[in-house]
Length: 108
Ligand SMILES: [Mg+2]
Image (tube, rainbow, N blue to C red; front, top):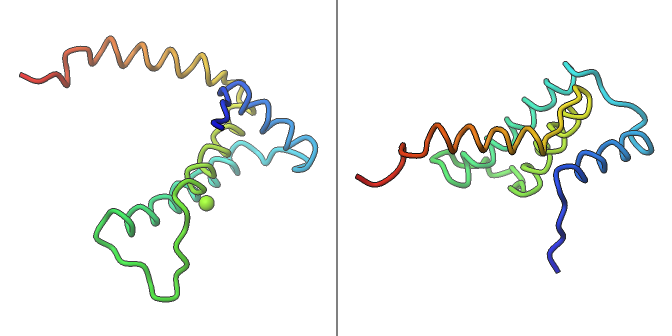
């Protein structure tokens, strides 16, 4: 069964986890650094799975989905900390891209 989770719910779930299990949010700048780290982990994995780099013999293969979820998690933390409603932000961003790029990628 497919689980449906809205961005609102994801922001709420992260906030609930932080306030019950995590204890507190790291500072915004700490989480920004962690976001960069997690993007780096995702990059390392994808470069080895889809790019031309090879994993070291001793390296355990990471899981793409888990690394993407790590990136999303920290981004959700940052959204909560900075008061960003990701649902509204995503809709607005999609509208912007749609308007701007309506004729950009069509076949000629
Ligand atoms: Mg990670």
